[in-house]
Length: 406
Ligand code: CO
Image (cartoon, rainbow, N blue to C red; front, side):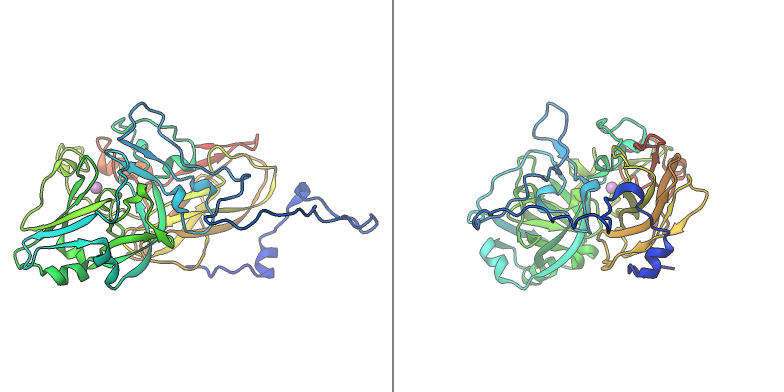
Protein backbone atom coordinates (compact mmCIF):
# COMPACT_ATOMS: atom_id res chain seq x y z
CA UNK A 1 0.00 0.00 0.00
CA UNK A 2 2.71 2.45 0.99
CA UNK A 3 5.06 3.50 -1.77
CA UNK A 4 8.75 3.49 -1.19
CA UNK A 5 9.94 7.06 -1.40
CA UNK A 6 13.02 7.37 -3.54
CA UNK A 7 13.40 9.74 -6.41
CA UNK A 8 14.79 7.55 -9.13
CA UNK A 9 15.37 8.80 -12.65
CA UNK A 10 12.56 6.57 -13.87
CA UNK A 11 10.13 7.91 -11.28
CA UNK A 12 11.16 11.47 -12.01
CA UNK A 13 10.62 11.04 -15.73
CA UNK A 14 7.49 9.01 -15.11
CA UNK A 15 6.05 11.97 -13.27
CA UNK A 16 6.07 13.84 -16.54
CA UNK A 17 8.30 16.42 -14.93
CA UNK A 18 8.50 19.64 -16.86
CA UNK A 19 9.59 22.80 -15.15
CA UNK A 20 8.56 24.71 -18.25
CA UNK A 21 9.78 28.22 -18.68
CA UNK A 22 10.50 28.64 -15.00
CA UNK A 23 14.23 27.99 -15.20
CA UNK A 24 16.82 30.07 -17.02
CA UNK A 25 18.49 27.86 -19.58
CA UNK A 26 22.20 28.06 -20.42
CA UNK A 27 22.48 27.88 -24.19
CA UNK A 28 25.46 26.06 -25.67
CA UNK A 29 26.27 28.87 -28.06
CA UNK A 30 26.31 31.58 -25.38
CA UNK A 31 29.38 32.42 -23.29
CA UNK A 32 29.62 30.28 -20.15
CA UNK A 33 27.91 32.32 -17.42
CA UNK A 34 29.63 32.94 -14.13
CA UNK A 35 28.43 31.50 -10.84
CA UNK A 36 27.09 33.92 -8.22
CA UNK A 37 29.44 36.32 -6.43
CA UNK A 38 31.52 35.27 -3.43
CA UNK A 39 31.88 37.36 -0.30
CA UNK A 40 33.92 37.63 2.87
CA UNK A 41 32.09 36.04 5.81
CA UNK A 42 31.35 36.87 9.41
CA UNK A 43 33.38 35.33 12.25
CA UNK A 44 32.12 32.43 14.36
CA UNK A 45 29.33 33.05 16.87
CA UNK A 46 28.47 31.51 20.24
CA UNK A 47 24.78 30.91 19.52
CA UNK A 48 23.58 30.75 15.94
CA UNK A 49 20.96 32.78 14.13
CA UNK A 50 19.16 32.05 10.88
CA UNK A 51 19.81 34.01 7.70
CA UNK A 52 18.33 37.51 7.81
CA UNK A 53 16.66 36.63 4.49
CA UNK A 54 14.47 34.01 6.22
CA UNK A 55 11.20 35.31 7.60
CA UNK A 56 9.14 32.27 8.69
CA UNK A 57 7.47 33.21 11.97
CA UNK A 58 4.80 32.11 14.37
CA UNK A 59 1.41 33.73 13.78
CA UNK A 60 0.53 35.76 16.84
CA UNK A 61 -2.95 36.29 18.26
CA UNK A 62 -4.68 39.43 17.08
CA UNK A 63 -6.16 40.17 20.47
CA UNK A 64 -5.81 42.27 23.56
CA UNK A 65 -5.31 39.49 26.05
CA UNK A 66 -1.65 38.75 26.57
CA UNK A 67 -1.42 35.91 29.05
CA UNK A 68 -4.05 33.53 27.68
CA UNK A 69 -3.12 33.05 24.09
CA UNK A 70 -1.69 30.90 21.37
CA UNK A 71 0.74 31.27 18.47
CA UNK A 72 0.78 29.11 15.35
CA UNK A 73 3.60 27.18 13.65
CA UNK A 74 4.17 28.21 10.00
CA UNK A 75 3.58 24.70 8.64
CA UNK A 76 3.69 26.02 5.06
CA UNK A 77 7.35 26.97 5.58
CA UNK A 78 8.38 23.68 7.16
CA UNK A 79 10.68 21.11 5.61
CA UNK A 80 11.04 17.52 6.76
CA UNK A 81 9.30 16.52 9.99
CA UNK A 82 10.92 18.59 12.75
CA UNK A 83 9.68 21.96 13.93
CA UNK A 84 12.44 24.38 14.98
CA UNK A 85 12.06 25.08 18.70
CA UNK A 86 11.72 28.81 17.95
CA UNK A 87 8.69 28.06 15.74
CA UNK A 88 6.94 25.46 17.94
CA UNK A 89 3.36 26.56 18.51
CA UNK A 90 2.44 28.01 21.91
CA UNK A 91 -0.63 27.77 24.05
CA UNK A 92 -0.47 29.42 27.45
CA UNK A 93 -3.17 29.97 30.01
CA UNK A 94 -1.19 32.35 32.22
CA UNK A 95 1.80 33.52 30.21
CA UNK A 96 5.35 32.16 30.12
CA UNK A 97 7.00 32.02 33.54
CA UNK A 98 10.78 32.50 33.75
CA UNK A 99 11.84 29.67 36.04
CA UNK A 100 15.29 29.31 37.58
CA UNK A 101 16.13 25.60 37.20
CA UNK A 102 18.23 25.72 40.38
CA UNK A 103 15.06 26.51 42.33
CA UNK A 104 12.64 24.28 40.42
CA UNK A 105 11.31 21.11 42.08
CA UNK A 106 9.09 18.23 41.01
CA UNK A 107 6.97 16.72 43.79
CA UNK A 108 5.48 13.24 43.33
CA UNK A 109 3.03 12.39 46.10
CA UNK A 110 -0.47 11.12 46.91
CA UNK A 111 -1.04 7.36 46.70
CA UNK A 112 2.66 6.50 46.52
CA UNK A 113 4.85 4.55 48.93
CA UNK A 114 7.54 7.26 49.21
CA UNK A 115 6.60 10.87 48.36
CA UNK A 116 9.68 12.44 46.76
CA UNK A 117 10.87 15.89 45.75
CA UNK A 118 13.21 15.96 42.75
CA UNK A 119 15.60 18.77 41.84
CA UNK A 120 16.62 19.29 38.21
CA UNK A 121 20.03 17.85 39.09
CA UNK A 122 18.31 14.74 40.49
CA UNK A 123 16.30 14.31 37.30
CA UNK A 124 19.19 14.81 34.91
CA UNK A 125 21.22 12.12 36.70
CA UNK A 126 18.59 9.50 35.82
CA UNK A 127 18.48 7.42 32.61
CA UNK A 128 16.92 9.43 29.77
CA UNK A 129 15.56 8.73 26.31
CA UNK A 130 14.87 10.86 23.23
CA UNK A 131 11.73 10.50 21.12
CA UNK A 132 10.43 12.41 18.10
CA UNK A 133 6.78 13.22 18.83
CA UNK A 134 4.15 15.67 17.66
CA UNK A 135 2.22 17.80 20.14
CA UNK A 136 -1.15 19.11 18.97
CA UNK A 137 -3.57 21.41 20.77
CA UNK A 138 -6.99 19.78 20.87
CA UNK A 139 -8.36 23.13 19.69
CA UNK A 140 -6.27 23.00 16.50
CA UNK A 141 -8.47 23.63 13.42
CA UNK A 142 -11.36 24.19 15.86
CA UNK A 143 -12.85 26.90 13.65
CA UNK A 144 -13.67 24.17 11.11
CA UNK A 145 -16.55 23.07 13.36
CA UNK A 146 -18.18 26.39 12.52
CA UNK A 147 -19.70 26.65 15.97
CA UNK A 148 -17.93 29.85 16.93
CA UNK A 149 -16.87 28.47 20.32
CA UNK A 150 -13.22 29.22 19.76
CA UNK A 151 -11.76 32.62 18.87
CA UNK A 152 -12.21 33.33 15.19
CA UNK A 153 -8.82 33.47 13.53
CA UNK A 154 -7.93 33.85 9.87
CA UNK A 155 -8.27 30.27 8.64
CA UNK A 156 -7.23 30.54 5.06
CA UNK A 157 -3.66 29.29 5.42
CA UNK A 158 -1.83 26.11 6.51
CA UNK A 159 -0.52 28.15 9.42
CA UNK A 160 -4.02 28.57 10.81
CA UNK A 161 -3.89 24.78 11.37
CA UNK A 162 -0.51 25.21 13.07
CA UNK A 163 -1.39 24.46 16.69
CA UNK A 164 0.67 21.34 16.04
CA UNK A 165 4.44 20.89 15.96
CA UNK A 166 6.94 18.04 16.10
CA UNK A 167 10.12 17.94 18.17
CA UNK A 168 12.69 15.54 19.49
CA UNK A 169 12.01 15.46 23.23
CA UNK A 170 14.58 14.20 25.74
CA UNK A 171 13.77 13.25 29.29
CA UNK A 172 13.35 10.64 31.97
CA UNK A 173 10.61 8.08 31.43
CA UNK A 174 7.94 8.79 34.05
CA UNK A 175 8.11 5.07 34.90
CA UNK A 176 11.66 5.60 36.21
CA UNK A 177 10.44 8.27 38.65
CA UNK A 178 7.42 6.19 39.67
CA UNK A 179 9.73 3.25 40.35
CA UNK A 180 11.46 5.49 42.91
CA UNK A 181 8.28 6.63 44.62
CA UNK A 182 6.28 3.43 44.18
CA UNK A 183 2.66 3.59 43.10
CA UNK A 184 0.02 2.16 45.41
CA UNK A 185 -2.43 -0.41 44.08
CA UNK A 186 -5.48 1.85 44.42
CA UNK A 187 -3.83 4.66 42.41
CA UNK A 188 -5.68 4.89 39.08
CA UNK A 189 -5.08 8.51 38.08
CA UNK A 190 -2.17 10.94 38.03
CA UNK A 191 -2.86 14.64 38.38
CA UNK A 192 -0.07 16.67 36.75
CA UNK A 193 0.32 20.36 37.65
CA UNK A 194 2.33 23.22 36.17
CA UNK A 195 4.12 26.09 37.92
CA UNK A 196 2.44 28.74 35.80
CA UNK A 197 0.14 31.23 37.53
CA UNK A 198 -3.03 29.27 36.58
CA UNK A 199 -1.54 26.06 38.03
CA UNK A 200 -2.58 24.08 34.96
CA UNK A 201 -3.86 20.73 36.20
CA UNK A 202 -4.86 17.65 34.20
CA UNK A 203 -5.68 14.10 35.25
CA UNK A 204 -4.24 11.16 33.35
CA UNK A 205 -4.96 7.44 33.73
CA UNK A 206 -2.02 5.45 35.16
CA UNK A 207 -2.20 3.03 32.20
CA UNK A 208 -0.58 5.74 30.06
CA UNK A 209 2.25 6.38 32.55
CA UNK A 210 4.59 3.86 30.91
CA UNK A 211 4.54 5.98 27.74
CA UNK A 212 5.14 9.39 29.33
CA UNK A 213 8.35 11.39 29.52
CA UNK A 214 9.40 14.01 32.03
CA UNK A 215 11.26 16.06 29.44
CA UNK A 216 14.02 18.60 29.92
CA UNK A 217 15.38 18.64 26.36
CA UNK A 218 13.95 19.69 22.99
CA UNK A 219 15.70 19.42 19.63
CA UNK A 220 19.14 19.00 21.15
CA UNK A 221 19.06 21.71 23.80
CA UNK A 222 17.10 22.67 26.89
CA UNK A 223 13.34 23.18 26.54
CA UNK A 224 12.34 26.67 25.45
CA UNK A 225 10.57 28.69 28.19
CA UNK A 226 7.40 28.69 26.02
CA UNK A 227 7.55 24.87 26.00
CA UNK A 228 7.80 24.44 29.75
CA UNK A 229 11.41 25.12 30.76
CA UNK A 230 12.84 23.52 32.76
CA UNK A 231 10.51 20.49 32.85
CA UNK A 232 7.53 19.31 30.82
CA UNK A 233 5.37 16.23 30.88
CA UNK A 234 5.23 14.69 27.41
CA UNK A 235 2.23 12.43 26.78
CA UNK A 236 2.72 10.95 23.28
CA UNK A 237 -0.22 11.32 20.90
CA UNK A 238 -2.52 12.94 23.46
CA UNK A 239 -3.95 16.45 23.33
CA UNK A 240 -1.42 19.21 23.92
CA UNK A 241 -3.07 20.49 27.09
CA UNK A 242 -2.17 17.35 29.09
CA UNK A 243 1.51 17.77 28.17
CA UNK A 244 1.86 19.90 31.30
CA UNK A 245 4.50 22.62 31.00
CA UNK A 246 6.63 23.92 33.89
CA UNK A 247 5.81 20.59 35.58
CA UNK A 248 6.04 20.89 39.35
CA UNK A 249 3.75 18.23 40.83
CA UNK A 250 2.29 14.79 40.11
CA UNK A 251 -0.28 13.49 42.54
CA UNK A 252 -1.46 9.86 42.42
CA UNK A 253 -5.13 9.32 43.28
CA UNK A 254 -7.94 6.78 42.92
CA UNK A 255 -10.05 9.15 40.81
CA UNK A 256 -9.58 12.06 38.42
CA UNK A 257 -9.01 15.48 39.97
CA UNK A 258 -11.92 17.11 38.07
CA UNK A 259 -10.13 20.46 37.82
CA UNK A 260 -11.28 23.46 35.84
CA UNK A 261 -9.48 22.43 32.66
CA UNK A 262 -11.23 19.06 32.52
CA UNK A 263 -14.74 20.21 33.39
CA UNK A 264 -15.35 23.71 32.01
CA UNK A 265 -12.88 23.17 29.16
CA UNK A 266 -11.37 20.31 27.18
CA UNK A 267 -14.65 18.41 27.06
CA UNK A 268 -16.63 17.76 23.88
CA UNK A 269 -20.33 18.61 23.85
CA UNK A 270 -22.24 16.15 21.66
CA UNK A 271 -25.39 16.93 19.63
CA UNK A 272 -27.58 15.13 22.23
CA UNK A 273 -26.33 17.41 25.01
CA UNK A 274 -24.02 14.91 26.69
CA UNK A 275 -20.36 15.81 27.09
CA UNK A 276 -17.45 13.55 26.31
CA UNK A 277 -14.74 13.92 28.97
CA UNK A 278 -11.09 12.86 29.00
CA UNK A 279 -10.91 12.69 25.21
CA UNK A 280 -7.16 12.48 25.08
CA UNK A 281 -6.11 10.90 21.77
CA UNK A 282 -5.46 13.12 18.77
CA UNK A 283 -6.82 11.08 15.86
CA UNK A 284 -5.13 10.75 12.47
CA UNK A 285 -4.94 13.97 10.48
CA UNK A 286 -3.10 15.33 7.47
CA UNK A 287 -2.58 18.70 5.84
CA UNK A 288 -1.17 19.74 2.48
CA UNK A 289 1.43 22.41 3.23
CA UNK A 290 2.27 23.11 -0.43
CA UNK A 291 0.36 24.33 -2.31
CA UNK A 292 -1.71 25.82 0.50
CA UNK A 293 -3.84 28.86 1.19
CA UNK A 294 -2.17 32.22 0.72
CA UNK A 295 0.51 30.89 -1.65
CA UNK A 296 0.79 31.69 -5.34
CA UNK A 297 2.06 29.32 -8.02
CA UNK A 298 4.55 30.56 -10.60
CA UNK A 299 2.56 29.13 -13.50
CA UNK A 300 1.44 25.86 -15.04
CA UNK A 301 3.88 22.96 -14.97
CA UNK A 302 5.59 20.66 -12.50
CA UNK A 303 5.24 20.94 -8.72
CA UNK A 304 5.67 18.60 -5.79
CA UNK A 305 2.59 18.51 -3.59
CA UNK A 306 3.77 17.97 -0.02
CA UNK A 307 2.40 17.96 3.48
CA UNK A 308 2.33 16.39 6.91
CA UNK A 309 0.34 13.57 8.49
CA UNK A 310 0.23 12.38 12.08
CA UNK A 311 -1.77 10.11 14.39
CA UNK A 312 -2.01 9.85 18.15
CA UNK A 313 -2.51 6.10 17.73
CA UNK A 314 0.77 5.27 16.04
CA UNK A 315 2.38 5.18 12.61
CA UNK A 316 0.98 6.76 9.44
CA UNK A 317 0.56 3.96 6.89
CA UNK A 318 -0.89 5.80 3.92
CA UNK A 319 -1.58 9.29 2.61
CA UNK A 320 -3.66 9.79 -0.52
CA UNK A 321 -4.05 13.04 -2.40
CA UNK A 322 -6.84 14.16 -4.70
CA UNK A 323 -6.32 17.01 -7.14
CA UNK A 324 -9.88 16.96 -8.51
CA UNK A 325 -12.04 17.67 -5.49
CA UNK A 326 -12.14 14.10 -4.18
CA UNK A 327 -13.17 12.17 -7.31
CA UNK A 328 -9.84 10.40 -7.73
CA UNK A 329 -7.19 9.66 -5.11
CA UNK A 330 -3.53 8.79 -5.59
CA UNK A 331 -1.09 7.27 -3.10
CA UNK A 332 1.72 9.63 -2.12
CA UNK A 333 5.30 8.77 -1.25
CA UNK A 334 5.87 8.63 2.49
CA UNK A 335 9.28 9.87 3.53
CA UNK A 336 11.24 7.88 6.09
CA UNK A 337 11.48 7.81 8.99
CA UNK A 338 7.83 7.13 9.79
CA UNK A 339 7.67 7.18 13.57
CA UNK A 340 4.71 6.51 15.84
CA UNK A 341 3.00 9.69 17.02
CA UNK A 342 5.31 11.91 14.95
CA UNK A 343 4.92 13.95 11.78
CA UNK A 344 5.22 11.96 8.55
CA UNK A 345 6.12 13.90 5.41
CA UNK A 346 4.28 12.97 2.21
CA UNK A 347 5.14 13.99 -1.33
CA UNK A 348 3.46 13.62 -4.71
CA UNK A 349 4.65 14.81 -8.15
CA UNK A 350 1.99 16.94 -9.85
CA UNK A 351 1.71 18.78 -13.12
CA UNK A 352 -0.64 21.71 -12.90
CA UNK A 353 -2.50 22.34 -16.14
CA UNK A 354 -3.33 25.92 -15.18
CA UNK A 355 -7.01 25.30 -14.46
CA UNK A 356 -8.88 25.33 -11.15
CA UNK A 357 -7.91 22.39 -8.98
CA UNK A 358 -9.12 21.33 -5.53
CA UNK A 359 -6.39 19.61 -3.52
CA UNK A 360 -7.11 17.34 -0.54
CA UNK A 361 -5.12 14.85 1.52
CA UNK A 362 -6.46 11.84 3.42
CA UNK A 363 -4.36 9.71 5.76
CA UNK A 364 -4.69 6.23 7.26
CA UNK A 365 -2.90 5.16 10.42
CA UNK A 366 -1.66 1.74 11.52
CA UNK A 367 -4.98 0.93 13.22
CA UNK A 368 -6.73 1.25 9.85
CA UNK A 369 -8.46 4.49 10.88
CA UNK A 370 -9.05 6.76 7.88
CA UNK A 371 -9.13 10.55 8.25
CA UNK A 372 -12.80 11.55 7.81
CA UNK A 373 -14.35 14.27 5.71
CA UNK A 374 -15.56 17.42 7.46
CA UNK A 375 -19.15 16.43 6.62
CA UNK A 376 -18.75 13.01 8.25
CA UNK A 377 -17.31 14.59 11.40
CA UNK A 378 -20.11 17.15 11.66
CA UNK A 379 -22.74 14.44 11.17
CA UNK A 380 -21.26 12.46 14.05
CA UNK A 381 -20.30 15.16 16.53
CA UNK A 382 -22.39 18.22 15.70
CA UNK A 383 -21.17 21.80 16.00
CA UNK A 384 -21.10 22.31 19.76
CA UNK A 385 -17.49 21.41 20.29
CA UNK A 386 -14.37 23.34 19.47
CA UNK A 387 -12.00 20.44 19.98
CA UNK A 388 -10.53 17.47 18.11
CA UNK A 389 -11.22 18.52 14.54
CA UNK A 390 -9.29 16.21 12.19
CA UNK A 391 -11.35 16.42 9.00
CA UNK A 392 -9.94 16.54 5.48
CA UNK A 393 -8.78 20.03 4.48
CA UNK A 394 -9.21 21.27 0.91
CA UNK A 395 -7.23 23.98 -0.86
CA UNK A 396 -8.31 25.41 -4.20
CA UNK A 397 -5.75 26.42 -6.81
CA UNK A 398 -7.33 29.21 -8.86
CA UNK A 399 -6.73 29.96 -12.52
CA UNK A 400 -5.03 33.22 -11.44
CA UNK A 401 -2.38 31.02 -9.69
CA UNK A 402 -3.51 31.92 -6.18
CA UNK A 403 -4.40 29.24 -3.61
CA UNK A 404 -7.35 29.68 -1.27
CA UNK A 405 -9.17 27.73 1.41
CA UNK A 406 -11.92 25.63 -0.18
CO1 CO B 1 -10.05 16.20 24.35
